[in-house]
Length: 329
Image 1 (cartoon, rainbow, N blue to C red):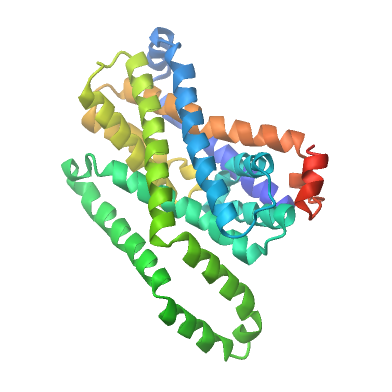
Image 2: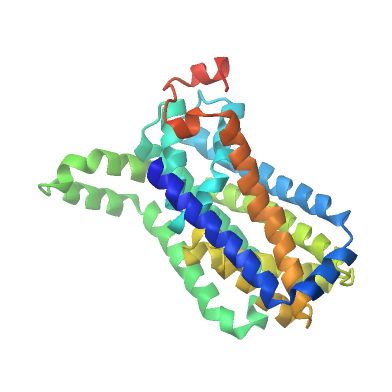
């Protein structure tokens, strides 16, 4: 937890520096003038769209949790773990998100090696969802074609390979005969079996569909922020908002930077200048507002859950799920 705390602080510090850098780059006085004219009644609506995104993603998370056999975990406890995971995205490479699998193991009793695929499949299906949304305009920006097509091919390859069960089982049997790896093959087998179940066609279709709708909701929130900044209410503005947010989410995810900070902000600002507005300060203001309404809002919610659930970070959680229901603090 000490190491995790330090990594989290690095991510938070980097995020603050990026926000300050973006503000100074766009001219602070001009940015202040734009914020003073911003229609702030749109900001709570954008937060509501983010909450809509979180709600649908939680439904997917809880579906995955049930699918790997953690049926004793209540919906409220599952929601607490889901929201508590938001700040973990601020660790370098998002490696801290593996802690969600450990929490899941301790709160439900499922092995860590079976819970880890839930975290990975959640991210993977989100990636496919934003890929689908970015298809709205990716081919109008030639520089993005290779990234889009490369990510799509790799993603589909992972799905296909995971479902060729005889091949994967043969590989596991071969690894089992190796002197060092063989002793640790059981957790690896648990990992594969859970991943196989989560990436089967129907569960994957359900997860990606739910993810597409949830991220579309967040794109609509970005559209509302653009309206608050004075951009025209039109189908073109809406499609650009959804496209820009989807692509920046994808870029932030593959960058391995904490929370995608730096990469996501640069993508949002650059794509806005390319597709929506020629004003640097307006693009920067939109970037700062949408990151506050999405990334930083989520981090704040997660830290709030941490504050009322000290067992998450004190590492003193009981193993039976029933104990959580009796003493949720």
